[in-house]
Image (cartoon, rainbow, N blue to C red; front, side, top):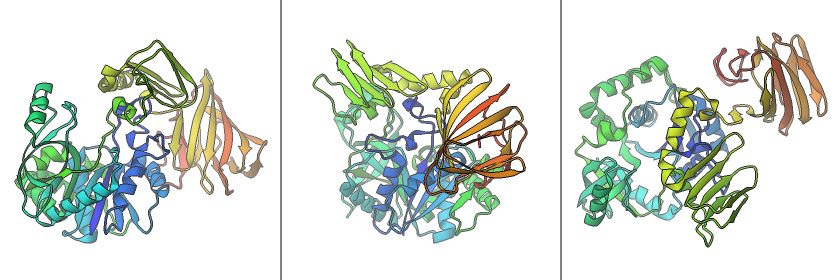
Length: 483
């Protein structure tokens, strides 16, 4: 059996302000309406003999990932989720994924590791290359995928391919890995040939991977086994939450550094499919068709006397006048204006915002929740106004606030509400008032989305003023999450 393992998470700091810590790159919705994670799911289930997909992601991204799965065309494939308490890089994630697959399917199962932030359009070549990798994995190789370079790129790692592996078209033994070389070395490798970009995709049998950990990272293997046992996950569980204390003891290291660069049974498949890791705004801009002046746009944009510019706008018209080689990314609460040469340095903005404690590094005005989403429409001293959308059948936690009162006004659908000791049903154009200190809950009993306006008032309106009493989604009873 082939088990795709989807790695989903990361801050995606080079795609700020669209990608943020609370809404990372895999959840970015592209121009065609799909997220990168949804596209990854579609690739995974398009491979032969796939009946199950394992997603490894952060605990905070579980419900967003589950929503992406539900929007995909998935036939009879079973989704399973392995939830990390914190990010520890790819080696711990892949190791714990292998232990879960071992317990459920045995050591002969083949893992296909797919990052959730890649864009691949050629599914025919992708499936063919996965089959090549799978055959090599059955021979005992740890397989990675190499992308034919199109230019001297300093932001990618490289793989130097050696001799061809008999009876495997496009499969080569790996001589060595080269980590993000300087420009002159990248140019030399392109001229020399036999070098590929490291795509960060892998294929191997569970037994071969665990043997490699036993040889090259035995302490990590022992820590991973301990974490897996401490997590008490049933092999049939749809999702498993890893135990935080034992998981934190695993080294924060990539699978390349921990295993692939040390093992002597590593092979590379020279991929025939197109590939982009969407690692910067320059890469995302390349997805849009240019006009005669080289301008590219996503959204409503007017360019006058401008050349080689990229503009993305979500909610409003953006006009450029007399600009050249400029990027503009407009979101409801943050605007990025940059020279195109600085596309790789956007993360420096995020570092500065994080150091200053500004919420824009972490959250959008619209924030996803298991029950739906909320959008901050306006806020000022002692007040905040939100638009709240609740899915059919979903409910917020039973909770109370110490410092704020709330007015709820239903604008669409009907809301079942607990307000103190009273339970009521309010419909469109009706409202209720919840004083500070009252326990309360909001539920959508209908079959259409419930939309309401919430007006908060009080001395402190922070999102951490929530005392959670009951919750339907397994979240901690007292937490720094709103609703």
